[in-house]
Length: 482
Image 1 (cartoon, helix red, strand yellow):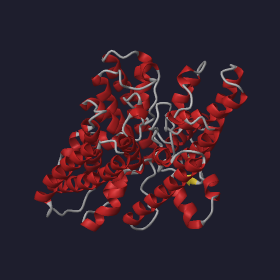
Image 2 (cartoon, helix red, strand yellow):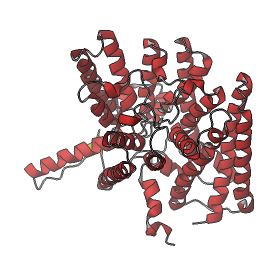
Image 3 (cartoon, helix red, strand yellow):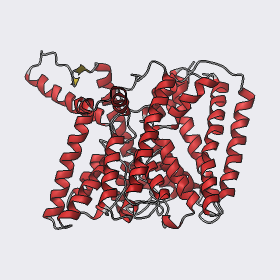
Image 4 (cartoon, helix red, strand yellow):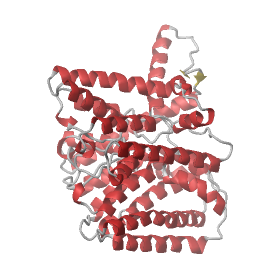
C-alpha cells in the first residue's frame, strides 16, 4: 500500500470536488442571496488542501490494488463529506454548527436525506441548491465519476469501481473498459435527471424546484426545498412523476444500459431482481391503501395517492413525504420502515440491504427447509436461471449477520445518549438504510438529537452507503499487514 499514491489521488479528488461548489456561486449571484463568499472560501480551503496533498506526491505512480480501493473509497466519502460541510458552516445567515453541518453533508452525499434544519424554505437559494446537488453527486457515486476521469491522469480504476457499485453481484462490467462503463452509467444518470426535471416543470414546478427535486429524486435522496417536501405542491401529477422516477432509479442501472443499447424493455420483466421489487412495491401498496381506507384515515382518493406515494418513497429509501406516515394507524409506520431494509436493486441509487440479498436469503432459507425433507439432495440456489456460487451465498449471510450486529450496536449507542427507544431504532435504521425520515423525536428533523447521537448516525450513513464491509475491512489487522 502506497501512502503517497493515496494522498495523490485524494488530493486530485478534492480539487475536482471543489469545482462542484461553483454552481452554487452562480445561483447565489443569480438570486442575490449574498452567500457566494461562503462558497468561495470553501473552494479556496478545499483547493489548497487538495494541492498540498497532490503536489508533493504528483510523481507517485502505482497500479491500484483492491486493498487500496477500499481505503480510498472510505477516505474519499469521509473527506469529501467533511469538506462539503464547509459552506454550511460558513453561510452568513444560516450557519450550522460543526456537528450539524457534517451531519447534513454526510446525509446529502450518502443520499440519506435526514436533516437537522427547520424552516428549509427560508434558506438562501444557493444553500438550497447545494443540498440538492450533494445528493445528486452522491447518488451514483462521485467515485464512479472519478473513475471515468482518473484513468486519463494515470490512475487505474477497477479497484475503485468494485468498492463503489453496490450489491453482491457487482463484478460484471457493462462495457469492456471500466472508463466506458463509468461514462455509460453517468450518461444514463444525467439523462434521467434532465427528463425528470422537464416532467416536473410540465407538472407545474418552477425551474429551481424542478431542478432541485430532480436531483434528489433520481439520486433517491429525499432532500427537498420545502419543509413539507413533495407535499408542499399538493399535486397528484407531481406525486406520480416522483413515484415513476423513484421506481426507475431503484432498478439496476445496468438494466437501463441494456434497454438503451438494445432498444427494448422486455428484460426489465425478465430480471428476477426488478420483478421482485415491482411485486414487493405492489403488494405493500395494496396493504397500505386498504388499511388507510378501512381505518378512515383518508378519503378514497387521498388514501390511494398518499398510500402509493409513501410506500414507494420509503421502500426505495427516498424519504420524500406527502403525509406524516409516522402518525398512521396500527402497524403501518413500522411496516414501511421494515420495507426500507429491502431497499433498491443492486447497481441502483437506492439504499437498504438491496433486493438481490433479500432474494438470496429467502431462497437459501427455502433450500434449508428442502434439505430437512431430502437430506442427501444437492439443491442449487438460483436467481432466475443462474446458479449462485456458494461463496456469494455465504457472503450474503455474512453481510446480513454483520448488518444486524452493527444495527443493534449503534442502537444501544444512540440510546446511551438519552434518546428514547422508538427514536433510536428508527433513526439508526433510517441512517443505515440511507432512508431519511424517522419516528419519535426525529419524525420532523434530527436537530434536537444529542451531538454524540448525530455522530453515531453519521457513521451509520457511511456504513450504509459503502455497504459495511468496505469500511469494516479497514479495522482488521490483516488489512494493514504487508
